[in-house]
Amino acid sequence: MIFALALLASSSPVAHFRHDLHSCGIDDARAIVEHDEGPEDREAGIAGSAPVSDAQMKCIAAAAAQREYFVEFADPALSKRFIELTIAEQRESGRKIAREWLAQHHLLDKLPVLAPDEDLASFAVRMENFCGFAPHTGLQLLGPKSVTLAGQARPDAAKVECLVLAFGATDLREGMSFGLIGNETYQPSDP
Image 1 (spheres, helix red, strand yellow):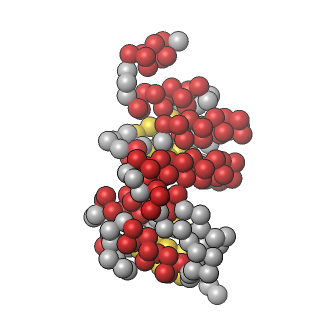
Image 2: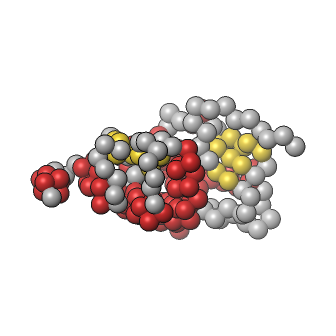
């Protein structure tokens, strides 16, 4: 009760999400919540390997979607189960956020749509153009069905945000993917 009263006195996104996690049955000692300025900087971790029920995981996922947090579990088994249980909800939540952002910026009605016979390479060029990049400067093909941000694109935050959200709002065909590699080096799979 004291925690809830302290939360009411605070308007911090961190405090709100900590309260959400507490409501899901995650104690404060396990909740690692960070926040900078924008939603893209909202991250939370669940420390330890103590059991977490499916209901708790779904509660965490719902709270994360509402507060626009990215959640990771320290325990790889818990992390894998969390992804398996919540991937559909996470995709739909991400799609909703992306479409709302595009609509607010008057871009949703201009969003490129993948044509039935179009390959990912030509669609990627159309997406780059949509977000203000010259062809082949914002995206990097990782194969015929996978694309990521190009390393040289990362300093242009506004255009990168556009690409990430545009792909988040787009229906790619089965087997096609857009993903972020981060600091890792892409290694193509063996044939």
